Image (tube, rainbow, N blue to C red; front, side, top):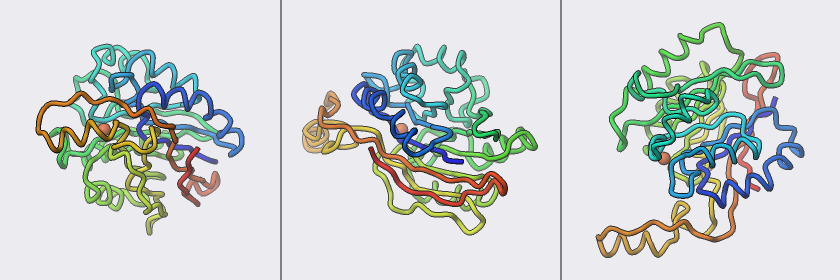
Length: 256
Ligand SMILES: [Fe+2]
């Protein structure tokens, strides 16, 4: 079984890039399940009805998010009405939507979980304990599990991965928009990467026109962030899972 995971989609141009290229990539690589982080997919950041439907049309099966999940007011309805769009599970319990979902792919039931880090980010519930609670809630109901851990600190991502090693099939990081070169199978069998990178414009600062960020960092005044209009590249990982053992057997970085 092959699972394609794509990092933070940066605004409409990246949605269009996926619409033009994702189905072909999945066909050529025999992908069975596609998970995409869509928290930056709306034209002014966040996720909205239009960008979510573009991502599903492009071929996403599950959309995960992070700290920008509720940036647009309309996102509240989106999370309430589509269980395949996740917000981080460690938000307070009365927040709309859910942070975990079951989906069938390739004759297997996959538990997809979305968590957010709390180091240098909003003080949500502890992601370690939240992961424990969700794995317990779904115990016996799934074959393999995948976690999008949307977090800033590499140490927090690595620590959660080692904490859950052997208990989840895949744990990948998102949010920092720069792909890391540490993809591996951890000692007890979990496929891991600190950050899968973004689907966004080349030659940018995390998707934004460099001059905006340079102004912000040199002038110390509010600056309007304008998305770079450079060519878009999609960054992600392709994970292979053995259907008999239900273990990850390979993880590699992909771009298209
Ligand atoms: Fe983020």
